[in-house]
Length: 257
Image (cartoon, rainbow, N blue to C red; front, side):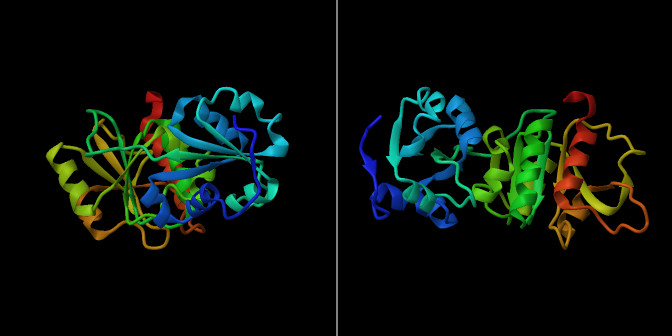
């Protein structure tokens, strides 16, 4: 580890790291930020490939157990510089620049469930959904006009789930066509669908579609799939997208988890 401590907010490495808070520059550099002790420790353990780690020079000793296991570039910065990179309200003093995983052409193994997210816009919802997807085995996630999964808020709320899922950006037409060719049943989360607890899903080849928080799923998915729903008391109109997606994933996977 270089003992030099960066003090300037205009240092090129610092400016690049700070730019990764912007979607445009994340895509340009092919990297995103992982902020905080727990998540950095997890990614250092091999979850994804790290470019470099920024650490508050005043907290090097606190994070020694993390830094000692990383053989890449470690950059010491002042608290002010570290805080300029972090979007956390209370930065913990350690941030990693992580390479986005190259997913390539979309393909899945037989009997491996697919999660399709149709225009999800709330970062907290997306993070929650990714977290549950990783926990239940929905490792392939297709995003259609959905908020950036590598934004700091999504990464943070996914609690590491982003490290263990493959993210694909596709169009509605592309994924419907793929499911049709592979004989994958499309299950659409919709309030007008059949009660998931009273109708068993016999197929193990399926894709679960979760729609936009306000508008639900598109007509294209409704016409291409079977609608399923979670029962609710009459006084409740709907559940949060993150909550409903999580319950449906656990229900569908059942004993396979």
